[in-house]
Length: 382
Image (cartoon, rainbow, N blue to C red; front, top):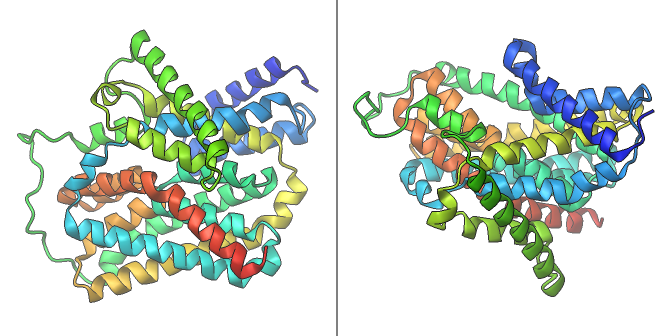
């Protein structure tokens, strides 16, 4: 068994590298995502005895490592871009976020006996991730100190349900009738706006080369934000450290000099993948199997209620189907899913608004998750 912290870090780095390669090369692993593949590989190495269940390396990634990842990802959020979304997309996104919160509460109340004492944590994490994406899920799991086994089971359920919901959203325009053509102008080749490929690229990689100066500045800003959040959490404990970190970073992200730095989302996603691989290494397969069905039902109920409310209330409010479909994907899968659904359905005029509300979801998901987790603790007496 590998026990040296440096060697364990090397093993986790190899897991992340292999996961990314598999995602790029094979359809199956693209469906699973590098995140889930990394968790599964880490779990495999741990359960065959190659990696330990506990290590200082895991402790670092569960603490400072994931906080730095959260900070770097949030540094890519430009709140001014949300103004591009327009009132209809913002309204649809808001309905979807409320639907997610209602779904998480309903699932928690129905399944608390099966899920156990971490029900309130799961309600908060699923609210966060189905408001704006997986970065919120990781941040809230860190804040709630969710057990590694529960975290891994919930991640697997999230990936499956998100994929199912993507397929459902592709079918919705057919099932509910042919949508009216949008009166909004579509982007054309002469437009100054970035193309779908470029937009998706910015969520995971740097559009321009990352310089040494960019890297140095990003590390300084991210580490400073993590330190500042920890200090504020001690001085004003009414807010959790993750909420302080989210708030500080969102403010810093609006500073022009910080917005000009390249590579924040790329570095942040890498640290999140290391964190997820370490969670897999800390998980016991037998416990994961036992938790599986209830956790899957939790995710399924949350997204099902979200879907009923966003399409039910949205249609009553006379919001068009393309807007509702893209907004729902921005909620459940984040900005990248909004891009995918808009591109697949030809909703080119909904692409930029979808990205804008997807980024809004990154910004507010942690706050929503904390609110719902606190509510569930009260309702369940946890």
